[in-house]
Image (cartoon, rainbow, N blue to C red; front, side, top):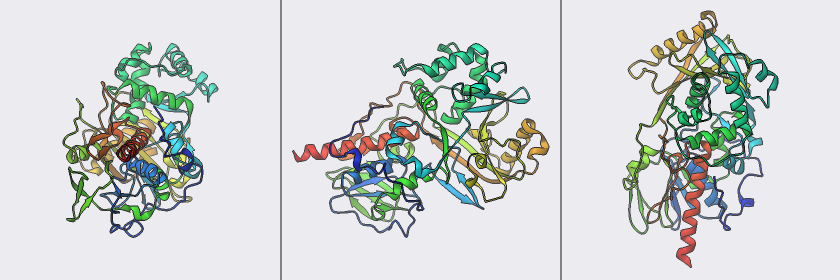
Length: 459
């Protein structure tokens, strides 16, 4: 992805070289809900990663802004709740440490990143089989060659593809790209399908091959990791470097009125004039409501998921490893034990935390959380043995109706202009790639476009 930096925003001014303060996300008291918009300010609608990235670049350029977030906290879909001493990410999420924009914008040491095992355990034919990165775990990789998660040739093809330099290939679906590499159905169905469904919530593998290429390169170059204090530590770090007076929570935007400048109407009856422009940084459904002039080329519904958390006194796996369902049966797609990755996900000396992900609603739209959890526990009893899961207790269920936008081909992951009207700009993972990095890139591009237009208007 291109990294165009305006001279007016020198990289040295971005908060990447100093540790971020470990402070909680702004609340109504710390992010003053009555913070007025400056007579000459930029309004940012949405406090997810894209909105926070845009705010970071505007703040680095010493431009006044007011960020309006409709909920009680920042982060959008990237948030962590504390429940009974456990840290619960709102849906299973991981940070790829090789994401280029994240490396540029975030201070990784302050996040205290804890890596997953470079590989996975795959449930197939009644038992778990190991898949390992041949370059980071060569012995494990050699020992796994005879297992049924792909042929020896499949594993050689994956290793060779991992070594190849990134190339520009025609866009197709992930399914077609994997077959074009010469991979057999056994490794596609048993490993890649559940693994990539855990990332893109797309078991059909109809997502753009460009996203697969990008993610595969990042997986080869870095770790899968969790911040020690939960995935919500990412927006916390970004927000900690912004003036608290520039953030208003529980400030829902009802409409954007076109004009020069555009006006923003809030749910409480207040109207704000965006004298220097508006950046719309909300998720796709809300963006379509606020900006009916934008068009979506999506041919498939948005991606959804259900994430269930359990408390367990006994767990069958002690490694910090992702576990995939390669059986082709059941509703569980992937699972892990977050407390194996970072002990801080649970109380000191306490029980373990179990995270289970279902793609879509798992057929559970009409079932209660308890009914869905009971089916998940029964299914996992077939993986690990009923005695291993009998004591697991449901802690919380997250039903995420909009987890990601559809990004099946053809896509425009890098070429979308953030300008969508006079003084109105848009960003978000639906306007770039559906990744953490895509959201950060999109926020930067919106801020840069706004600054360019300001410079052009003054010249």
